[in-house]
Amino acid sequence: MVSQLKLPVFLVSIRAKLFYVSLVLLLIPLIGFRFVVEMEGYLRDGQQQVLLSAARFLSASLSERPDLMGGQQTGDNALSAEEIEQRRLISVVGNSDSTLAAALGKSYQQSEAIERLLAIVAKDGARIWVIDSRLVVRGLEGNLNGQTGLKNSRDEAKRSVVTWFQWAYRASVRPLVEQFGNTESAAVVEDSDAVSQAVLAQVDRALNGQASVESRHTKSDSTLVQSAAQPIWLGDNIVGAVVVEESDRSSRSIKAAGVEALLGMTILIFFVGFVVLMIFAWRLAYRVRRLRSEADGAIDSHGRITGFISGATSRDEIGALAGTLEEILIRLKRYNNYLEQMAARLSHELRTPVAVIRSSLDNLRVSKQVETDMVYISRADEGIKRLANLISRMSEASQLEQFLQGADRETFDLDLLVAGCVAGYRTAYANQQFISNLVGSPVLVYGVADAIAQLIDKLVQNAIDFATPNTAIVISVQAKGKRLILSVENNGLPLSEPIAAQLFASMVTDRKRSASQTGHLGLGLYIVKIIVDFHAGYVRAINLPDGKGVRFEIEIDSALT
Image (tube, rainbow, N blue to C red; front, top):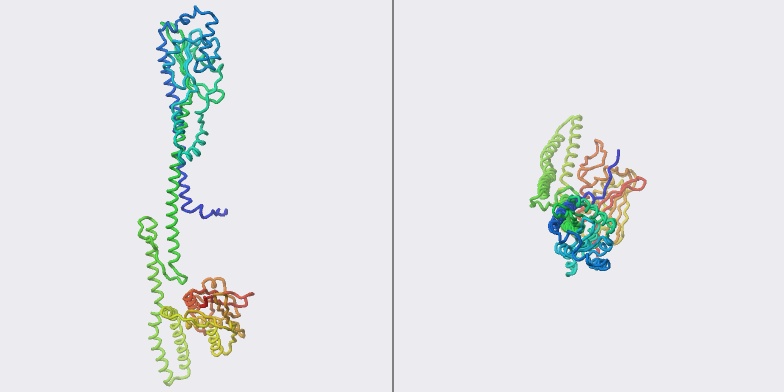
């Protein structure tokens, strides 16, 4: 089976998932850019209609005007060839597109009346041709490199006071806009011969009575140039054609402005939306982490409910979850209280019947009984003693907790206390060897001396039960800085792994009892844990090297400053 790929925690967190969701905002510029592209196509179609209308207007203005299109200009016949050429050169130099006019050569013969009319209707960025039936250019007005109104307004904006936001906007957005073909500042470079051929081909169709709208691209920068041609009529005859040209610089400028505005608004919306989503994600993750921490800290190492869940007053889903967890903790606390008090209640309830049975056995013992009856009475008496012992141990833990709650702390010498306990053990367990490794000087502890003595009793009793016969039990006290280590060590079987993890829990034991042994409830080390926690210490069980035995270590604070 293919193992699952383990990703970093952040990549699967709520904040990361909300970040992934925020990337959906990137669809806004894609949709907007698609709209801008389609809008550019609509603008080009509209431009064609405008050019065609302009060509029709000029055609109507020049038609039925024999003084303009009926032949050569009045007075030209009276001029010499040099004077005609001189006038042509002057008109070339004064033309708005002098490069193209010069390239036309003698095909360009200016009609001042026609060009005055063209100058009235010509617009910035457009070029108008008037060509007669002899393919002689009688009028040429305008230039495709004229500035658009949009560019002029932007130039004015550039001259205005630049704020930090405008600077950041231009530094980030303008370079992106230029990638979409924004060439409004570049001049339209044309091949004069190619322009003449394209215009004359369109004029040929117009001279045949066919109006047309065509598009072509310049070879240098692929600028789109659109042109509309209309015939000029004189009676029933076509005496010329008018051609109106305009580049797509205006539509491209509008497209660039749209893309620029789109990118600017997208960056602003994405930034604001991202910040809002991140704040929301942080707040959401904070509430979840706080809920997890409160749920984890609500139960102590003994399994008691000691904390509470806040945030249950919120009306959203997390608040509902907090409320549910709080209700669960309340129910668990009630159940734990019931379990904690059950041992004391059972102990109290069982003492009376045990006392009755014991008194009955005593009465039977003093009465005359046969020898076989005395055997059964002795067995019953042994069972009652074991039962009484179990009842006493059942209430020991709860009694100890009540004792610690009302006990007064005092400063005492741990070294002296351990020495006294060892002396008592040597007397009580004459067949067991004890070795004490003490500091030899006062080792002060601030706590309850009787509780520490009970702790040592439990550890020593546990060591005696598990020690290998004819081996010593070692009781040591060590001082390490501000910490004191009390240890009890015995040779014997090591701790098993399943038991070591829960050794200090209630009702846990690793004893393999025989029928003749005194029963154990697994409360001895649990009592040790209660006393150590009361003194803010640590307790741990360690297997000796080579599995020769077990050492229990208690680490508590010293009262020395």
